[in-house]
Length: 638
Image (cartoon, rainbow, N blue to C red; front, side, top):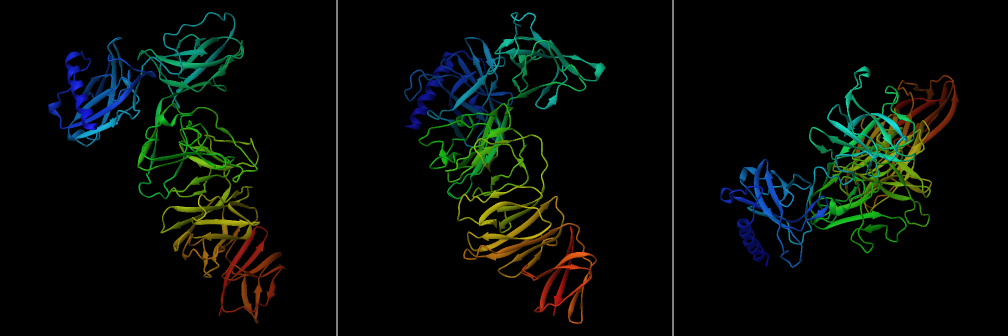
């Protein structure tokens, strides 16, 4: 059946080639060995085209490699549905090159060169993009028709005589100040022009470069948007201005160019991609927490998101089943800025977001439902197209896509979703483009076969931060810190000297590695005690420990013993007349610790001190703690 449709279509194409006039010259097919085909419907400025006056051409570089007019009727019997069956020709050296598309309207003699889709020429002799029922659209955009603003030329309204404000500003495009005299700026309120198009001129007196100085008319409270026109190119810049002003009569914005420099921030349409590794036959893992960098978007408009077999969920703590399926009974939904989503695909795909980078606020409102199984849990996402920062603890998906683990640092990458925990309903968090300060911390990563992190736990010093342990799958390997009969992924420690249990549970028998890294904290003593084997690891010398573990091992596997401050390793203990003598000035605490980290003796002393210890042969640690200072000495009893 598929072969029959292709033959009938080919006959239709050959008949139309002789009957119709063409804007572009079709290539000589006999010169090429490979053919790619595109079957799709066509939209221009968002309007579905239903006329054979529309011609579509394919280009590799500057060479035309395929031409066709829209066809009708649709072969599967959809009346009035025009479509293109475009054949693109190429030879071996051009495999992998980009195919770009243009459109031409014979009725209006208009050429459209801005197609939002591109394709890569396949190495197959016959390769097909789209299909009769694929839902693929080729989207063309007019150079001077903006989906969010008015056409040029701009005609300033004369209805606000005597009311208005003045503005002095520089122009910024995609984060860079632009010094060009060809720009003209229009100020609009609800698509009504309120400001003269004003050429930019050189302000040499202030070494300021190009600027715009304009009057804006209107009423108090009017919200003013801005657009750019390029007089040299003869087109409205396809950019969105994220700077708006509220009109206040008889005011002047940006007049003080030294202390109050005002910038009109324009952002052009951009493309953002995220690589997804497919789970294929392996249904384990390969999950991603994702977010949109372009604000609200329909998943159908994210290239490859709905291809193959896929999973797309958002998280709702108040639902009976917390994960809400895109294809479930609740119906489809758009991706929203500041919200995160769980995603997986059966094949390797590149998710492609195309649009204007999100320019709104980074504040996100969180929910808390005391009756929910996961009370306070919120899946949020970085709304921006670049790295954002937060000032709270959070979770990320691990590199295998199998488990949600504690996030390190305070940065969240573009298109990345994270979990956070709210304590009250309606509390807010902020994604910021400015990096806040982060306190001192000790990070513990557990890996297997020295691969990527399976799980993670963090100890923070000097700041109040806690985060409960969350397991996407309770049977997975995990490392966590128990406190007050609860399991934590992040705990706070304020003391300069301390001990804490570090629990570990293996998902399967094998060899694991627990590695440590610290930021902004100087340890004078940092040891890991393996309670199962008795091994004492000096983490200041060796910041990782490899060990064998079984699923049947007790979770209370490790103990962490640490001290911060200005410790020294000067000898202060010696043996005399059967006693251990401690050289000391002033008040202090002396402790004797065995290889398991167990404190055998702890006494407050003043001045030098002599103590008797009935110790079996082995290795012991003496600690002498005075305020924030600590001395540590290893003693061997034979």
